Image (cartoon, rainbow, N blue to C red; front, side, top):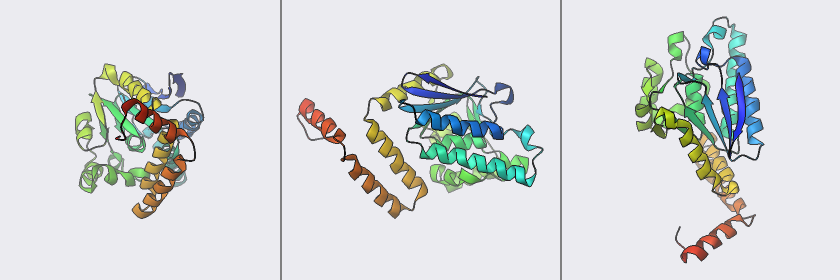
Length: 252
């Protein structure tokens, strides 16, 4: 079960399967796509993705369901998982993953498909797929970009989990907080984002998406266009003009 709620400037999507460590079945992944799109179309400024309880953010794909898979079932599951990641990367709004516990397999992939990831101190993060006899795939291609090829190989070949602090050290998450501060910190980040021009945040996310999906030269060209289109509106003039009037300086 997944639940979408509105709290302040944020749409919060919570995975509510604590009895299964918030693992996702195929139907759950399809539902997650629906909720992400619904949240992106609301007037909120950011999306928070988290899990119920204090054991797991998301333990990945439901291994009980996966144990009966045929090749066709596996292909269907991976196709939906790819769509989850593509939607997360392609939405206009920033997604903040708040890791209330373990993020494993597909759950780990969701972490580095998010825009910002913060974790409770007890959270563990890893890609244990090889333990189940199959490799990690799909958006795992992003992992070397995030943590470097050497560390990505170690994570994928050994199936070892990182502590939250280890994950922060290698850039897999941005911040570690006390468990009782996790959601407060997520909402603080939302408020910081909400205080900035919506147009700029939306275009900034599209620029980052370009660097994820395109070769560097093409991404640079894409972002040049995105910056230029920002000036089709009066927002930059208004914001910059206010800055100059209040500070009496042209410095950023």
